[in-house]
Length: 611
Image (cartoon, rainbow, N blue to C red; front, top):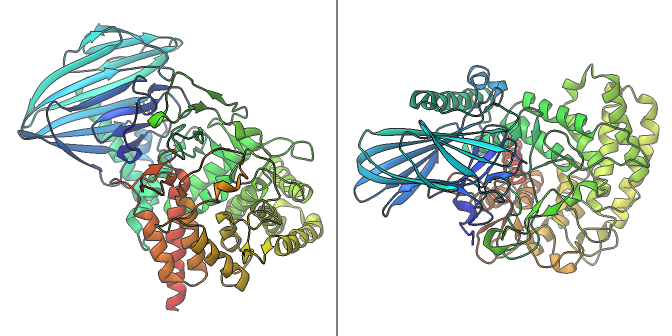
């Protein structure tokens, strides 16, 4: 059974794909050549789905870190007889090294692993078990000078190795001893049958690519990471994580680089997050503005408007999510040959929510456009028409039920958050009317905005709950109602808004003070079982408290959530309320976005309090 704790994994990225490496030096997840491609190593989801490990032969303890201002991982193994450092990276190109905005362009699609003995001597074992197509294929291994190849299906892999490898069928292994000062480099490259076969790389070439990669990350960080408020190291690192989750060819930012890590151990809430959600757009752009720079924000917005482009109207709703290349059809299927992390089946690829109706997306995309207002000057007529059509669609669809921000698989509801984001769509469209050359629509948009506002205030409030609730007529709390303050619908210290914040803090939290999205026992989502607390929602609570002037409480909630980052600063989607262990796909963009935005809110609240 695959059961290494989620927190034991580290992220590598070349802004095309990602790898996850365990504390024990095993690459247990790698999809090639894109984030959403089938895995080559998939032990994360099944012990038999492939891995590549390098670690000492005998007992050891391990510590790890990212090299300063990078996503290059260094794991240090301490053994009774010596110390071994393992350096892991997905190589970046020279473009990123020279020009920080080009990080991820011209990459060699090369995974680099280097070992260096820093004291004494250390026997080392290397195990290389490639399993392409999510573990379905057991490739044929063949030796060549300086390494070996793996062939099977559409995959061709070449492992560059300075030590001889013994192999049998589809597995290769090696044992060797390093003494102080010894250094060896390994590399893995993939191609398809339609491409030129990958070659063996020399020791000097691999070491050079590692140096280029470190420099590229540091150039990017120096150019982009200017936030100097509280928790600036956490914010800066989260900005690099978001960059690591960016598909550079298109500008897409994925929700997470994994699929089917469960929201409940042994449960069925296992989803594929290797896609880009319109829902995330406004939150993401705000975070990029703080922790990266407007260039990355503009790239993401350009991707989103291009991927979403098409006729928007009564019969053609805006799609809620897209593939990293802008693909629309993300049909979901299961992989029955994989047991899942800790036997949490099914393992899914694709995401069945792609064709749900979610009327919040109009507000999220127009809110993103509003944040980039200065960059919208001179936009082309097609983009203007598209953005205008989003506002017009919000007018028509704001009275319809939908599946909501949490993508329930039960019956559509009149969710308060969805209505709120229709209000946002109209509010931001009115603010952008001059840029959009749509001044003639402002009276109609303003009337619709007033109508949806009045309905939220009237039907979204529950006297019984003493709060704004999940849906019209409901008494159930939902953390998404915190967004009413965050998007400016109501002041955070307005009595009913403040009552909602306090109700969520008091009644929608676990014993640790972490926030649930909603109570799953209501059955509203149409799924069996439960889930963990949601880190994004906890950061939302911190942000809302900061906006309400409760700065010390906001900082406490922020630190409570941030404390669940692992030893290298990565956050999952959820936390198990019983054990405090990470749950859900990892690392989770939403959690890091929430961290950045909450830190900024606390920083601004402290500034206001000091005036």
